[in-house]
Length: 271
Length: 320
Image (cartoon, rainbow over all chains, first blue to last red):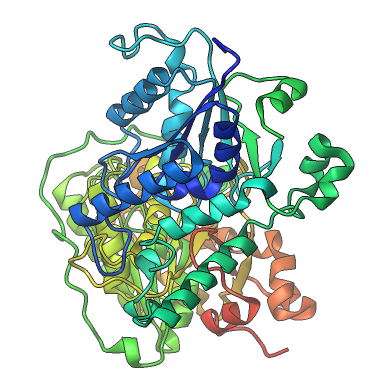
């Protein structure tokens, strides 16, 4: 770390994934003055049942900007087609340059065995950028990092070839409303239901709309009530207070980045 | 090219290895994926199954038995080879071999009651491209599949591994309306299954479902006999020493018997390996009597079937 302030970059596949997996921790870092950037590697342009292409990509970029304001961080998307992210050398270089330009201490991504091909290839691309960010003459147009950052995976529920290991868990009870505000801002994906929904989901009257908003907020509140799931990892950091934690996010240390000691890892994350 | 034979069986089938012929830029077999016969099966209450193998013999090998069982009950089964198999022989290659193998799988289809298709992609050259992802996605959608089967992404041959990756990458995407918007999306993610292999890393095959194929083993063995270029003649690692003089009926019969015997042994392998999984579906006593079986693992990226749904997708098990 060059200064006391951390620099964190999170890669997600689509314009909502970083918010989904790390909005709480991101908001907590941001509140302490750390620099956090969320990057969606695709523009999300097939992520809706009724609209697609450029107009949807622009709409989702705006949704990210609104999330950035809510969380106090930068949230952007790259102009790659949704559903078409491949582990190309060009994409590897893009990811390397983004990590270097951000002078990242911490990099977060999906695991390479998440459910969606774009998620898996985000995981592969970020893994493939680990270490390479330190090689001076790889992408020699962008100053390399002197130290390999800490690389982390966000959680998923897949078991093969290995289940997610919650090496560090963060209580997000104090910022959970901000995280839920993001899901409201990501209207195309949650309120309208994204690519697998239908027009029936969206009510036309004011009462119906309010009820739908509440439904989405309640569902997502339930989704992130992960205190129980990550109780053991929370206990490592919060001791007895862990029992009261309701909302949590957790991360796994990737073997290809810097390997911090347990104490160091604990210090890097906001309580 | 199916070499998931045990080393012993491989030794028996192929007594000396010859280098495979160089890839040929020769002619094509079947061109683009043929338009799917829409047999209105979508509404006929029957299951729709599509299996992807790497080469023109892999589906028959891995799920020929269960394919024949589904077909016998009127369900719709399609076997797709993702390559044309055009270097899968010790003495011939290119377009002529691709055409020969397309004819072989067509014959298998007649024996098993399944549809057969080989994509015109060179053997040994299947890669994980967007073009191939789209092709797989369209084939699954056009078939309106309830169930999709492929290799695991850690099988022995690169073409097998990339079939696994391509099919995994089509899971979920088949439900996204504006991905390949030229082909109507599926409203339900199919169940995706992996066929069996013996590789242990990063994780071994799990026999989530095991099916007795005793009632159709003659059909499966007949299919293996029809895949003449691969088994009777030994495929790319075979050689002329395997092939008797066609004018010597005794020698021809002996070679056929040899191949059949090796397959009988090979297809009994899953039975001993997966006695427990068979017991789950047949009960321990009946499972103990099964001679030939096929086993499948549920892929995490498709729909996750409940135990009841598994029984609907595999309508072969005795009522409990």
